[in-house]
Image 1: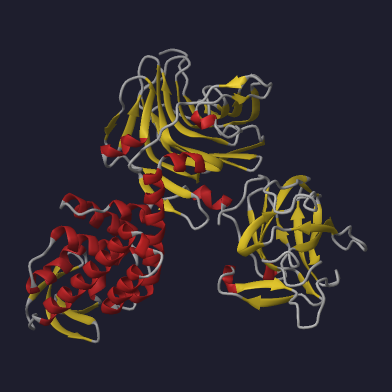
Image 2 (image 1 turned 120 degrees about the vertical axis):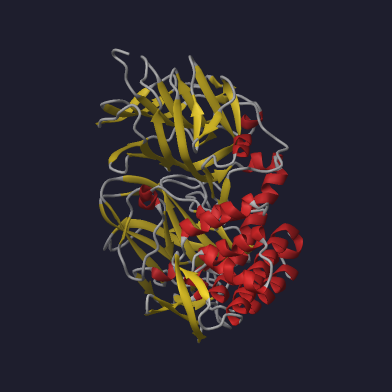
Length: 591
């Protein structure tokens, strides 16, 4: 087709909308006009993609289309039903073919994967991935044969950035597009990068779309925080995510025991966790944790029993080739191959080779044993992800329930590491580049006066900073007691600050705060009043906190080029400071 061009549109549509928009209410657009919203989805039994809940409240979703049931997470907005072929989601037709993910995201969000045009494109043909709060509003990454662009579509349509890069029809191209704070970042094939600042949209659901083209989408990865209102309308999804969070936390507790070969102890640990809070209130997480621990122990006991039945000279398989058994001492198999002695740990054998040993002791349970092999590969000191994926696929084919395990194998785009919040060591100057920044309080550049580092197992890293209130001391301390964080900015930036604090009573719920150039002699310290609330919790810096203590509305702060001193000083004693969170977005960090 003469004059055809490839347009891959990756659209992140995250609309800044008030409460109720996802329930069908209209939202004000940039000029005050009503922005239509998609009909809400409620009453779902669960999500079908691979899921990995993160400790900060976000989730990762991954769609590799290995199971056509994953399509249940997508609703057709235009065009016919999609098809899956050769590991690709196939979209396309004469006009628009658009799918919407059932779950809306709130705030910072990322999408990545691979897209290709299956055939040459006609004029205006394109495909798109989107986070979309309402039709025809949001951010686009348009990928063309020669020039790529970031584009915001609404009644004030704006090209935000462009770059030159060549794309070819029929060639798979990786993409990664992220929106966090006021910043948009995009990568094509891991190298071509674009960025822009815009804060118009903050909420929406994922879209997939092909327009006048047949396209394939492979390995679609999503990262973000699901809208709490949507979760409230889909309690079974909320329960699914809670169960997975508990299950993954339990696996983390079992992993050191598995790596040490303490299979019986791991099973006992799993049963102990399952009987305690909060697992006792989440039977699915408790059951799965115990089932996995028991399957792993049963597999390894059978492997050991099978090895115990070997006699010198027996034929075995190792590394995909025939060998002869010699002896087994201190956890090491001694084998002979072509007159050469080989030393192998049983865990290093291939899956079929281990199951051959199991078969010497008992009948192989294909589904359960394959699942246990996958766990062995996943939770080894050096995980073997490809081998684990192969075993999980075989276990699923044998009828085992493997849905909970695939989240452990979700691959991230290599460029996603550029956006991971960074932890810093004590005394460092911290560079703020636009991505969210977590800072442990004890890693301050300076801890001065009566401020001191203390321990609390409920604090991040089990440490926090405060000025304790000793017997006989008054409510108020001296502002010379302070912690100072040095923040480097390359350009002026508007940011928001949250602090994880412990402010349990009305006479121990305030700091003094200042943001000033490094070395300023008399920084203007202002009171920062906190809500009196038990336990550790996040609170934003609010310039009006004196009359609005405990507000969830943060005030913007201005970082200047160079080194900025972020100062938190004592006002009232006995207020704990655990961690800071600095972001270009006003959204709260995770729990």
